[in-house]
Length: 91
Image (cartoon, rainbow, N blue to C red; front, side):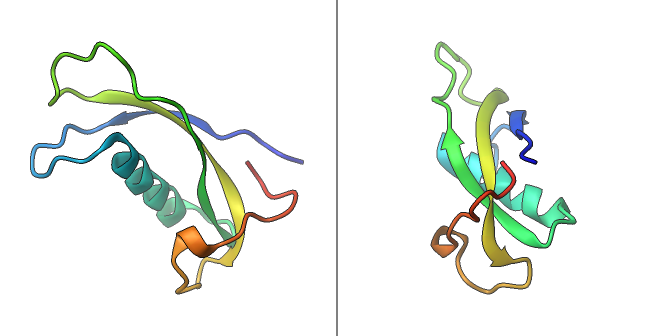
């Protein structure tokens, strides 16, 4: 069965390096894969727009996105962007 992984992640402020919203979410996906015990890797499926009206650019910001299981095993050296989504893979 499919399960939904919709994260309301709080992104750390970019004090050492300015990251775009998308770059920060892609780093979060990497962390999800690093901490996952699943056989296959996950890739970004959907990214909600960044929050509006955030005046403090250094403040933590919520992020909302979904990932989906790919056909690439955890041991794959293939770039994640090149991994196809698994048919009926976990979301």
